[in-house]
Length: 238
Image 1 (cartoon, helix red, strand yellow):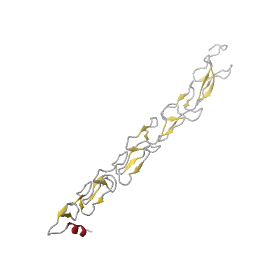
Image 2 (cartoon, rainbow, N blue to C red):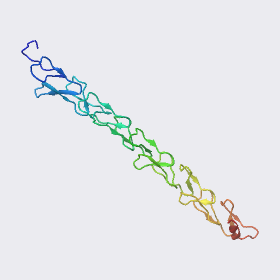
Image 3 (cartoon, rainbow, N blue to C red):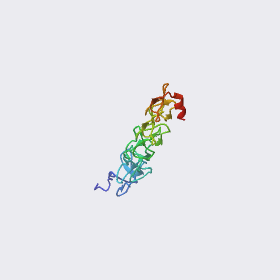
Image 4 (cartoon, one colour):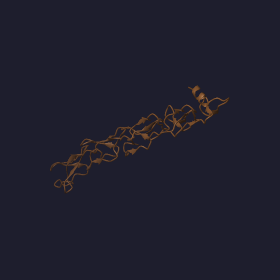
């Protein structure tokens, strides 16, 4: 005011701690104005954690999602490091992206990995399980299939093969048992007993009928000729 006997109220972003001052002081960065019940700006106070101020403002601002501020009286907020998130405004700290989840950005809420994929803590993307492996129960990683089981890429669990087929050497596929062997359980092939045969991929062996004997490949029964005895051919195989 032009009248020296009349005091003006401090404007937004400024304050006066005591009466009789000629001018108001600007609010410092990291602070906000202290207002009385009458709306007078009589001081400044530090911004709370999770908030900041550039100065010359009545109020502190919230840290935006994806940023945090653990200290009081700060002029800025810090971005979360890769693999860490702050989905909410006014975050004091960032939290690590949970194991078994993906985090598209520092401001995103973690999303659970799809079945058959995994992510360790702090990773931003989920990875498909390798063929011959399956994801752990918490989807934090993968582990190799146990002997006698298999899986294709992106499997949540390992499986046994159908009868007559067994896992390949890489445990990424099911392959048929050779002729002369069989598998009733789909884990491993077993050689047919003496006097029995099987075709390729057979779930079990079948005994040859009297008067016949297994072929050298063990895939069929051949008739005995010239009066030969079945037992003689079976003994000759050993």
